[in-house]
Image (cartoon, rainbow, N blue to C red; front, side, top):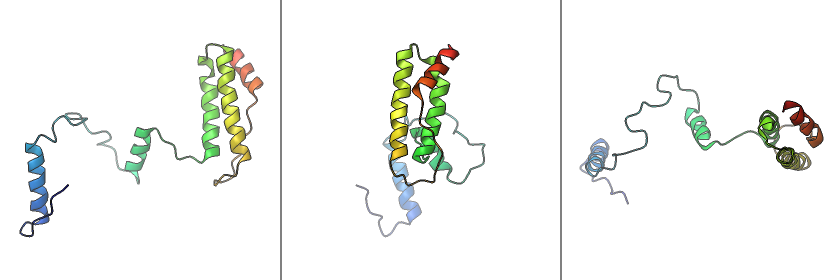
Amino acid sequence: MTERKPEHLSWEGFAERQIQAAQQAGEFDHLPGAGQPLDGIDEPLEQDWWLKRKLKEEKASVLPPLLQARLEIEQAREQASHYKSEALARQAFCELQTRVKQLLTSPLPSPPVFVLPIDVEEELERWRRSR
């Protein structure tokens, strides 16, 4: 637990004392990124820069569900040529189709977005042509 600030010390002095104690204890040694330049140090800060960085690090998404589904459909189409067999391609598109249908039939707290269900056979035909 953090010690309380003694009344005779200023906040600056109290903080400095804690920093020095941590340095002497080696608590700042071997931190991730030590000796490396800071990412984006020369770029201007945008509003909510820290939130964007955190979302990127966590690979998180803040898109409404239907927009996320549209993005996943496009990504699946782009990645389709990497499937080694039709069975793997079919499985991927069937899973995505199930997810999209579920989203389309459930009430969503997001703005209306036009998303068509996936036609698995049509996607497999695209997959065959791309090979």
